[in-house]
Amino acid sequence: MLTELPVTAIAHAIQLAVAPVFLLTGVAGILSVLTSRLARIIDRSRFLQGQLLPADETEQTIRIELKSLRQRASLIHWAIGLCTTCLLLICAVVAVLFLGSFVTHDITVVIAPLFVAAMLCLTVALLNFIGEIYLATAHVRGGL
Image 1 (tube, rainbow, N blue to C red):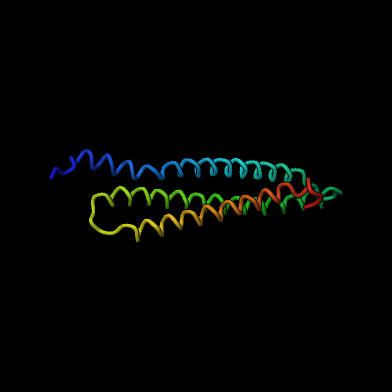
Image 2 (tube, rainbow, N blue to C red):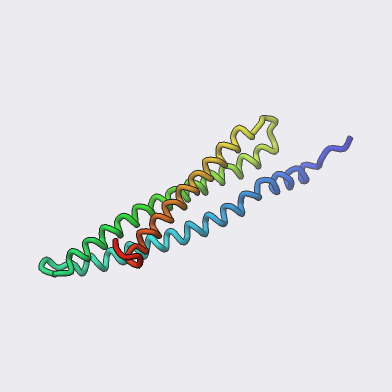
């Protein structure tokens, strides 16, 4: 019986390991959106802090918006951290899939928890993102 050539085996291992890379691309796109939103929150916060004057009647309105911006920044911060963790876990899945082609051990006990953890991180990150969007659009709906 003919055995596979080493090059063919490596090519097959790469094909298996590259499949989750498409997920990496999608999560990286989400991460890009999150970081740009965080940058806008920080810029707006700095602008408002520069507008605060001790005897200004709009001070309360500015402070309310600053509080909302802090909450939004916190949600985005968590979402960025969770998306980054998701990306790291997916990278670990890719590495284990590749290495799994060359070992005789059952790697499903490693891959499954890594992938589930990655998806949980992504889910919680997206929930934080939805929360941030909810806070960001609160003034449109009628109040902070």
